[in-house]
Amino acid sequence: MPQPESQVIDAKKAHPFRSAVIRGLGVLIPPLLTVVILLWVINTTRIYLLEPVNTGVREALAWCLSGHIRESLTITDETRQIGIVNGIPYQGLPDGRFVPLSVHERVQNHADGGPIPNTAKEVYLRYVELTYLRPQYAIPCFLAIFILLVYLLGKLMAAGIGGFLGNRLELAIQRLPLVRSVYKAVKQVSDFFLSEKQLQFTRIVAVEFPRPGMWSIAFVTSEGLSDIRAAANDAVLGVFIPSSPMPMSGYALTVLKSEAVDLDITIEEAIQYLVSCGLVMPQKDLQRMKATENIPVIEASPPVVAGL
Image 1 (cartoon, rainbow, N blue to C red):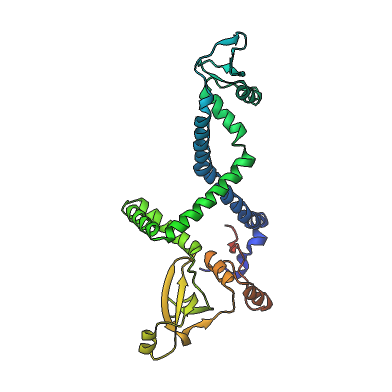
Image 2: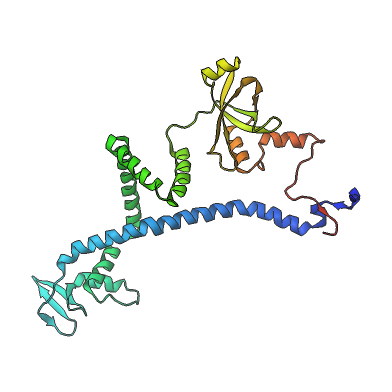
């Protein structure tokens, strides 16, 4: 038996604390999620890109400088384990090898109370990190090199051999059972955002899809195929109906021009509406709803029955 209308209490009056918490979360969650996603991207880039590159460059530079390491020297200062080669002092290390005293002192001065490396290789790895791979110099240099490599890769892919190798690599990836599913999804997203052949939407319409009585937002892409226009004996439109909440995928359809309803919204508002699954309304519709008294505005929290 339905309860009287008087027993249905508005959520804001019945639970003001919960309503305030929900509204506060609605304000805080979007910026917090934005920060979390940005931190995740930065951390992932650092772990899987910057750190491996930094380690490889450090090993390469240390190997290049390892020619200054001496295996055995005549010690001239027994207390400090110092040897002289061509007037250059060398510091002896526990592994029995010698490195230039200037290198050892630089590493020792930046030890910050921590242990000093005991081997010549470790000393040079630390020296390279302190001298050549300081963050204020290394990060801009790595970014410049990365952009240059991406540019060269793009030029290579534009050439015949680059496209051939890219197709071969894609075919090899698509043969892997689990990887191909992830790769296909990632490629669709990247192609949507990075493709130079972007869809040129002329206007936004609403069409009855997937059945009469159900309306979907569609982007007009063309005037339709001539054969379909001739078969329908009427003007047609080529439209793209995006899916929600991932508008980069959807359906390419041809509909009758007379059955398409033009919408007075921008592309950005349409995409926001789709991504939010209809929660984010265009500004003009919100203003019309507020101006019309007989059209109720749906609140974020549903009504609660008293006693629940």
